[in-house]
Length: 166
Image (cartoon, rainbow, N blue to C red; front, side, top):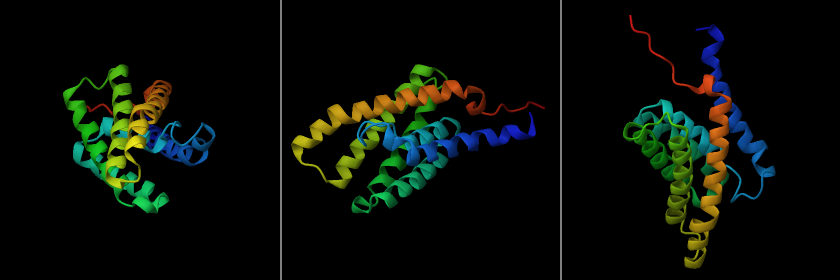
């Protein structure tokens, strides 16, 4: 392993965070554009234990909540639950398969949006159905598509480190 190999993973995570604040606004409306912060969290959960994934989800949620102070705390709760559940799901499913990872990205986005809607209480009853049946699946699909592209393009950089047997 080269000395520069250990910096590849943090570089990709930083790139995804930067894309959240620079590129995302140009990819369509806020309801449809892929969520790069959530994608970085879900990629992290592929490699981490459930406790660390929940802590990372809490940090990502606080970062998102700082941008939307009207429903402060809802994002932290939603991202914590999604981080824990996605990390736990890798023990149940074969997480190395591309389709399973795409499903985790889609489900993570949809479940996060569901929790945000339930906890924040900012939408009326007719808007909730529209949000959960139209906009959340579209955002989940775009996030899953970008996630699969990122995992494919940087597959050598994002693969979990192999442990040496001595």
